[in-house]
Image (cartoon, rainbow over all chains, first blue to last red; front, side, top):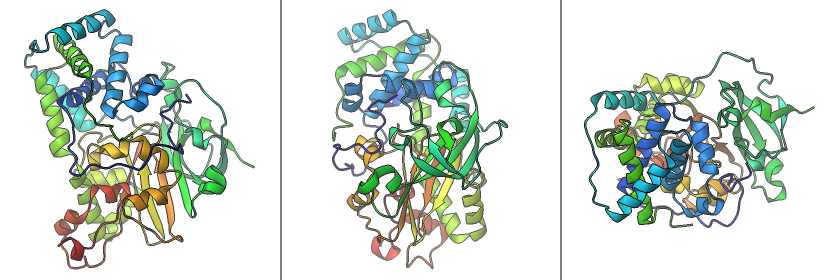
Length: 226
Length: 203
């Protein structure tokens, strides 16, 4: 979707601001959000593509006015409700209850089995492996042109790279197509390539000299360029 | 857009606690799980993993060759897994002629197994929007000015492939042991927005 998350080449965000000796987390709630998302994916309530798309679906103005972990919170709560893990009403009721009585203790307990299962996922990661087929249509060095289309759903072809000429730099393997996987349309594995673009092709006369951008693109994003 | 880690509304805190308490009641979470998982991210994965890989590549040409040919396997050789150990890793080498820089314009993909949790600036709209359009200006803000003839390669992490930069080994580091070399390597150098300083300037 042509959302504000698709930031490549946009103007107006000012200099890159850095924080000296930045901590990993700026508040305890961020840690809880990170782990809740791990639970959501480890338990397969949703997948990484649904997770990313749920961030894209949050309000466009809100996206720019909130932090990374607030994006995660929006996505995790949207998906846990949509997937029926948590009821919309019970979530609203519990939130209001805690606003009234913030010191209500959690009904916590130890769960060694759950801990062991999640630590296994932490060690192993949640990334999907390359699949054996289909065979790639393009080879390294092939000239390609990216599709120029405006899908309203999830895609990983950035707006700034649509309708542009590039060259296949490398074949990565065959991976789940996010455009399908984010919308419950299955895995639809496709060959994935690193595609190199000259900066002049992407940015025209505004391009900086001697620059190339490499983007990882699925085969259905590409057409052969004669 | 500078307030990307400002204090959230108290509503956010209550909302997170509401979700946390409901997941605990449904048997899907415990505070012990939160603590242990976070501890792993804070202590066991971080830029020291990437620095170990870089230092090995600097001292061992055969390892460097394996690293550039198959990053995932060469990194696993050193026993580095951590969160996201399953991600496919590609390592790109800086040379006097080529400088590499990593970004994710669509979200904030980052090589967690080797660099740990990403800094706020990497996830900021300013970096994500500008890294692909005006990398030289961005690099200059980070204090890196490259000759015009140096090619800049930007890696936009749009899939599940994760990128790490193998920085140039600094001048004056010839006599250093592998562990001393690793201590010179910074997170920002492995993202590609900094160069590894010569040991003479850091002592």
